[in-house]
Length: 419
Image (cartoon, rainbow, N blue to C red):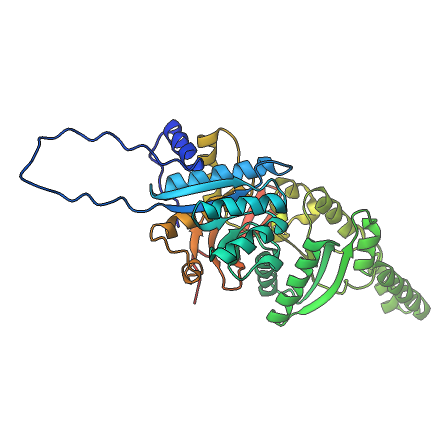
């Protein structure tokens, strides 16, 4: 499902996009005049039946701007990958389960063979029930594993794939015992669960886990995570023992301990931080303050680290996180700007990929489970991905290393899936 080259001009592409979004078939060009041939009779074949794909998004409400970007990205995919028989049927879910239920009923009544969207777990549940009753699969953007399966496939950026990728890479680099620092919410708890599962599968060891409340004192959180007080007490006791001995070796050992705040490293050599933005920068600055040395402890992250501000914190230099490859997404973002005159939201790319998947499979009209979960998967603007029978998505991610001048690819994303 690689992106095809767009040959239409910007205005023509936008005009076609509007037709698709309104589910209005393009007008046929006038037939060229030709000499009459009464001696030859030809049979006119009926045009192929349209293949309708429902698109359910929050086009009003608090997520309306994101929903509009995702709609425009899906339309762009249809203009680049789809053919004229494919008809996109977008409907507004209003950001509520009730609105999602009405939107699902509308696209199913219009004859949709596949439903793309919606965005939130609560709205996915409202769409899933009528879609299952109609035997229509759903490719949704939620990252809540609880709504996956039984005809619902999640194409969003799941924490599990990010955790598996960065932890496996850290183990290859020598990490053996993994700790976690995460917010006490559904996302943080999911990341910790994924970390436990991954560590067990790799045969590594699980270290301490600290879940924190939104307004909790992060100094206290990190102090406890790194056993700072216990390690400081151990240092003081060791110094006292050396002073009592008063021999030359003990005096030299005391001298070497000058400037140290604690004795020994924390009970882990890798730390997964499930945060982004300003909170991540606050946490990173506190790690060396409480003697969690980033030179000795590998700091790991998730896709929330993609923001450029991560590079401004010295304590994160050399830290790694898993994320989709950037080259194809940057090309998509340029095409989006050319078409619509604005930058797309980050999640617009998954709407593009879902619509392009629908366009590729729509050429045969087959959206069955075996086709959606084909082993080789699909190549999208966020790298290769494949839908699994469980309803989850597997993605080919890169491991990125944080550096002052930018992100360095520490381990490239795979270009295809192995056996």
